Image (cartoon, rainbow, N blue to C red; front, side, top):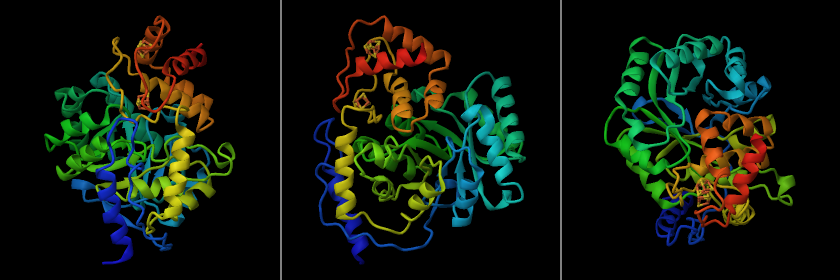
Length: 380
Ligand code: SF4
Ligand code: SF4
């Protein structure tokens, strides 16, 4: 058994005994006997659950990228899985991907998403996505951002996804989730319907999510991890700290994850992250992650799931607080406003603005009420 495997075993042991309270993340008690980082200079492939697709473990979240040369560089590096959505950049993201991969369609796996609406709306959304992507089919089609477990196996959604497969518009189907991820994954694991789940997953999340990911994977679902960088802060905002390789290594240590799709906007970022494939988490990485965790404490909602469902008015506040992460971490005001533009978000902002104080306590030290006020200001 190599030192890297020993490192992985110890990691899993340390991580699984770590969550003693909601504020405690798996980092706190992690065993320090790690292998030193090894640069493998190679691609690492994993199988995406029951789809059988052989995907590069580090792939690309295209959401915020507007520069096709980044996609070309990712392709040249050998990365083969790309995640977008109908709504990203008002459709320009899919259009850019369609142009960038013209003539290369059979060499990449494309995953896109649609917002659930009426059958007519969702069908139109998928057909528009296919036109923008300049393809007859996508490899993975996901229902975008499901919120509640009962949405996962909704008969109308299942019928629609089955129809998309039958019509040849999607090879495989599933859903994405940003909030309350563990219950949704557990629900999905009860049936063999979904092929793929795209879930937020990073070092700030509790073992509850780790266990739900394992359960879903063991039921056959291919796990795609997003929000792997826990906020995307730049080194210049963190006194030179650059924990992004470490954050990605942490996620990929979980062998139940088939592929991570960190959001990438520059060639430098994709080169830095692709280099993680085939390397192990080192002591230095762990140290950087701990510093990063301190930086995030009280700053953004990392969607750790610790207070899901606590709002007495049913507000999914971590969904609203995602806008703060996009503004402060990604420095993308436009995207921040975009996530607040849905009818549901507007209703929730109204509920929060009518609330004199927030009933929720964030175990990660976030002043939720103050942050929700910022969301309200952003919106207005
Ligand atoms: S508000 Fe705090 S406890 Fe709640 S999900 Fe966000 S980081 Fe976790
Ligand atoms: S401010 Fe009020 S409505 Fe908004 S999340 Fe907090 S308790 Fe819920």
